[in-house]
Every structure is written in C-alpha cells, then in structure tokens.
Amino acid sequence: MVDPEALARDTSALVQVPSVTGSERAVLERLGELATALGLEAELHEHDLAALRRHPGQPGWEAERDELVGLSVTLHGGAPGRLCLNGHVDVVPPGEERWSHGPWSGRLEGGFVHGRGALDMKGGVAAALHGLAALRDDAEAVPTVVLQAVASEEDGGMGAFAALERDADFDACLSTEPTGFAVVCAQAGALTFRGVVHGRGAHAALRLAGRSALDRYVPLHQALQAHERELNREVAHAAMAALELPYPVSVGRVRAGEWSSSVPDRLEFEGRLGVRVGEDVEQARSALLAALQDGEDPPVEIEWTGGQFASGETPVEHAWVRVVAAAVEAERGAPARLAGVSYGADMRLYCARGIPTVMVGTSGLELAHAVDERVRVDDLAALARIVAGAVRRYPASASPVGERA
Image 1 (tube, rainbow, N blue to C red):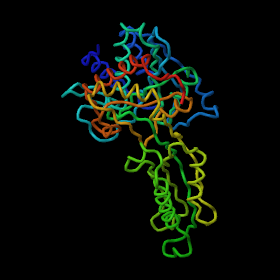
Image 2: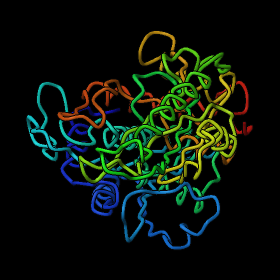
Image 3: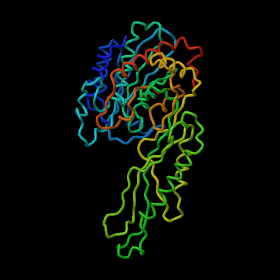
Image 4: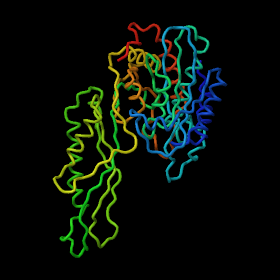
C-alpha cells in the first residue's frame, strides 16, 4: 500500500536538501535514512572519481566536483530475476528569479510539493522508493530490485556510469524521469560543443581591411540550421517521428569582440547537437564538422565539451515494455502511450549495457529546470503504484524479460 502523505513528506525532505550537480552527498545520505526508515537496505558508495575520469567509456562532465557518491537501495526478493530502478538526485541551480516559496522549501501546498528537484527528479526517486516499500510484504513473490540513486545526471551521467561499473547485473531497468506517464522507449542523444571562428582585426572605420569573425559566423549558423533540417528529414524511428523536433541543433552562447570600434577577430560559440536514435556518436560528430567547413583559413575549430549523451532505445515489442505499459494502463485506466524524447538521460547508459530500459514518470515536464518547479502528490502516488505493479508483473511475463535487447 502506498501512503501518499508519507510519500509527499519524503519528497519534501529531499527537496529541502540542496543538491546542485557536484554536491550530492547530503541528499543521498538523507535518502538512505528514508530508505532505512521504510525497512529497506541502503548502501552509500564512494566511487573512484579519478579512475572514472580516465575510463575510455566515461560520458563526460561539466560541473566541478571533488567526489562522486551514489546510493543503492535493495529489496531482496524470492522470485527469479533482478531488476533496477534508476533516478538522479542532482538538480540544476535555482536561477536568479524569485520563487513563490523558495527553491529549497519543499513546501506542501495545493496538492503539490514545491521546490527545485521536486519534479526532476527527487519526486521520482521518492516514488520509486515507496514503490519498493509497498512490495515488502510480497517480497517472496517478486524478484530482487535495486534502486540506483545517482549523482551527476544533469551534466552527463557520470553517476549512473559509476553505478553500472559497480553493478550492471540486471534483467531490466525502469527510470522514473518525468514523462507524463508515457512509456519512453527511445531517447535522442545530445552532444555539447564549443566552436571558435577566426577573423582578422581592424579599426571599425576601416572595417574592409579586416575580416569580421561575426560576419564569418553568420553563414555557419545558417549551416547549423540546415544540418538540423537534414537530421529531422524522414525520421526513421516511429516514436521519435511523432515529436515536433526530434533532433534539435542549437547554439546557446555566442561571444565576440572586445571593443565597439574594432572588427572582431575571434568569435566563440557553444551549442548542442541532437544525435539520432541508433546513430554512432562519432558519425554524428563527423557530420557536424563537415557541415561547418566553409573553406576559409584557418578552419573553424570544434571542441566536444561537457556531457556527451549517446542515444538509447528499447524495442517497443520487448517484453519489459509490455510489462511496464500494463502497469501504467492498470493505474491510469487507459492504454499507455509509447513515446520517444528529444533529450538525453541516463536511460542510454543502461541500454548501452544491454539492459532493456524504459522511462515512466509524472506529468509537468515543462516545469523542470523552471522557477516554481513542483510536482503533484497524486502523480507521485500513481507512479509509486506503477513501479510496484511493474515489479509484480515481472515473474508472470509471457516472454522472458531477461532476454537482453
């Protein structure tokens, strides 16, 4: 039985512990205390950050940190199989605008839990925790389930990568990211990059004697827009094709010039490249580099920075998809929608290990990373019941879920 009030209180308790990416220890310790109070086994892990950064497969990072901590919460089951729940506890900064209740208030009001991370995704982690707790009395009838609560999702996924380096022996995984209760079977990749465009400086009064890096950048920006159109032409994956823009290419920062009366000789830009489902990351990088060749000397310089999110997918016909979709339908009273998303997530790290993985979570994704972020308490309770329902359905699946995709 899921207690919505207790779930709301625990979500509030997690929101009240600030955990901007890079500083997650305190919230993971608090989560461990909540898990223990619910009668579950919790273990805090200190990962070898230096070794992970040297690992050739590591997914990149952006935030400064001097440690990487994770938490595993285990329900030991008596049925065959081993399942994983995944969720991250790091959050983005609260921003500069005023919040109605304060970003770390965790206020319970109007049927919502308010605060940074309530939606994305401390509420989802708390729901997974309470879904596990609801299974304690039926433990002999369900498989063993491990909740991997991780850090560093927002800046690349190093926390999930570290958790999987430690323990990847799972038959399937459910991540409780906010999805509006759609069963997400495919996620695009996202690669961040920094570019440098060189020009030739001159006095503004004699600008023709120079070559403005800004003027050179304008057609390059148009080339990025053309590359986006090409990426989104005839999208093959059905779940991704349903999106308005499956694979965005965007520039988020541009900086050029030091003096208003000078022709700028250098421009820096930073952006984000969408990676198509099933596309090799190196191929995606090469295609962007080719699109930015303008024939000028020196050529545009591109550096791949921060988090490097590959794509990920679990076939819609996979048994695990059917199991989770059945749990969603039982809770929501309507067939579950199978979907793709245009953003990167930890899901792809599990898929890369051959672990069939889907995402299901609460509504309100538009409030993620926004001022006055909040999550509905009844959505959290529904998600906890879906988690428990999916685990209960696992042994009765008509096809072996443990067949890796």
